[in-house]
Structures are given as structure tokens and as C-alpha cells.
Amino acid sequence: MQVRRFITIAATGMVIAAGAAGCKRSPLPAAQTVDNVPVVQPASTQQIEKEKMAKVLADFYNLPPLGVGVVFKTPDGEVWDRYPNGILTRDLKPSNKEVPKLGQTVSIVYTGTFPGSNKVFDKNSASNPLVFRLGSKSIIQGLSMGLSTMHVGGRRRILIPSELAYGISGQAGKIEPNQALIFDVELLAVSGESLEFPKDEIPVDQPLGPALPDAPAAATQPESKK
Image 1: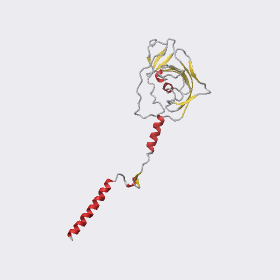
Image 2: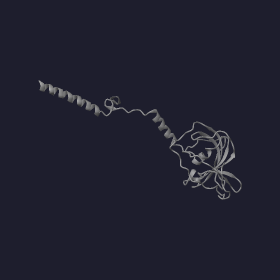
Image 3: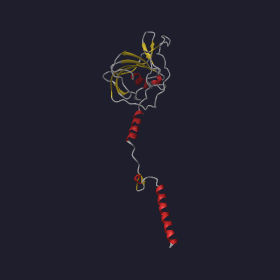
């Protein structure tokens, strides 16, 4: 009787131990399986929104600020503001209205010319303005950068170095490789929501660009812009 009782107790202990070990080996909690098939948990709302925003931002430049400009005077007395990225601007009509932000929709009238020859390669009219979101990759980066500090109602002449325009590729039949461009722009309106890149994506400053074409760089000593 004692031997039989010992065997019964030992067997019961083995069953309990086996059951406990089986629980430890379960790969997923019972609530995460249906008929032994793992249930895929839906992505969080925050993750979904983050992925949507990443897709939107992929269509935009992370526009660096123009930086601090210096005054640049041509031999004929024109005054331009020259920026570290090579862009030069000359305000033709001042304004103190709204300034556009990255991602907002802007409406502009423009005339594009080649420096030196003043040959027009593209233009539009107030009855058919160009409408786009500031920073969109459908527009050359330099134009968005030059517009980024304009005020609604203002007019500005923007010289864009080739690396912020069409670069070494140019535009077949229209713009030569490594061609700087000038745009006379009027900012008609700004609307819509702005975008913001993650804080850790800080752009690196670009080297100082070329002087105004056909004007000696040493014609006038640049002065710090106030």
C-alpha cells in the first residue's frame, strides 16, 4: 500500500510539473491566438499618422533657411542681398504682409530670364498664376528658398545658382547644364497648412555661391546686412 501510494503521489507531481512547463513554453498569451493562429495587432494611430506624414514629406525639400545676407552692389548701382547658399535677391516692391511657410500653397506671377542676356525662357501672367506648395519637389529648390522670406504683395528678383536650379542636367532644349537663372516674382497669395520636418533633420549649410553674373565680385566690398 505504501509503495502504491508513493507511485500515485509521484505520478501526480509529474503531471503538475509537465503542465507548468507547458505553460512556460507557450509562445503567445491565449488572448493573442485564435485556433492556434497568431493574431496580428493593428498599428497604433500614432504610428499610422507618422507613416502618412513620412510619405507626404518625401515629396518636399527640407528647405534650409536663407541665412544671413550681405549687401552686394553691381557696377551700375543695383543692390542685392547675397546668401551663403549662392542665392541673391533684390526686392522690387516691399510689403509687410504674410510670409509663406514650408508646405503652404503659394500663388505667384513670374518671369524667368538668363543672367547676362536677359533672354526670357519662361513666364506667366496674373490671369494664369503658378500655384504650388512651397518646398514641393515639382518646383526647383532655389525658387522655393527665394520665396520663403517674401511677403504677400511683394515683388522680388531672385538669382538662383545652377545647383539649386537644374544643375548639371539642365532642361532639354530649354536650359543649358550648369545654368544660373533669374526669376522676377510677385507673391499673390498664401493659404493652407504648413509642414514641419523632424527636428533631427537639420540641413547642412551650403558653400557660398557665385557672384552676380557679368559683375566683378570685387566691384564693391560686401557689407554685413543689418
